[in-house]
Image 1 (cartoon, rainbow, N blue to C red):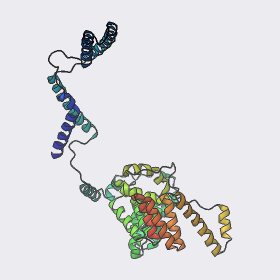
Image 2: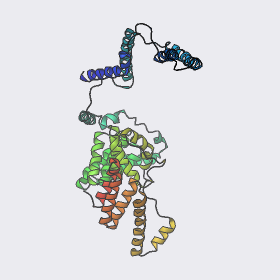
Image 3: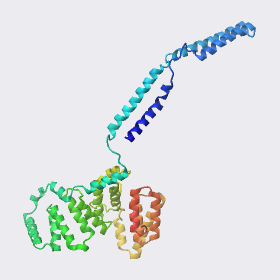
Image 4: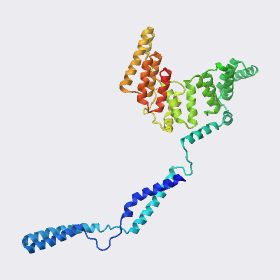
Length: 413
């Protein structure tokens, strides 16, 4: 209610400021309105008669002056006649127009807000928005609920060799008899997925992880999450989210876990975090990675949702540094280890010189920092991190990529 009172008061105040000239304007003055220019010319005519009577001017001069003043008087009268067509309205009319103007401003503002705004929507501070998003994430549908709604019909099943289907059925029975057989569960995961039985596949993969225990890898958890997401028709459920978290705990740079984490954030109204993850993956490549194409198709829309300026290039993010030519590869294969190292240093040096003189994209700074990290040159990696921070310190998405590269090179915490 307080907001509406403040908004109403501000609207009336602005309307009054705009219409203040009408309020101040007086009504039609009493008596005839005298034009000041015409009065001056009349006074001049009277002065001519006085000067002639005193003998200051001759008759001819008096006649000439009268003619000139009369001409100017006629022009002034004509101009005054035009102005008399626009007389000020009475004060009552001005006040009525002012009142109507305020009503129009108020009604127009209310109509505009009803059209583009959200009447009745409560105040939503950032802290409350975060709490709402957290509650929505906690209460979103489970893996089982989504799976129950997804059709399990596989039209391609008729095209599969019946012998292969029979062999998979035998494998199912064998694994059922020996549920703790690691190799059997791995094979079952693989073949259920090939048949499109992704629910059975992710259940088998969960058993693989259970058997491995502490030896389960980041790829194991990424596989589990991927199978659950496919089984849920692209939905990242709380179970899949936990599997992704376990994958990233074991390997924070695991590309599949980062891609699906970006998908999770996109589905839970955090496109800013999606953009940070996906743009980093695009910069790293390789260009033929399975996640590159879907990211390229969505990155501009993700940037728009996140309020981030999308990449300017039609083909943003090269997906990693361009690779060496076939001739360079052949030449490098024939080099000694020291010569090959010198060649790599030369290529990194050229990239460094270009970035120092011309600047570059966040992805190019990321590659430079990582290259120095691989070469073991921490001083240059630290300097590259400093220069990249100076160039992109105000871009939070770019700095996430740059800082991650610096952490990998051991020059940032």
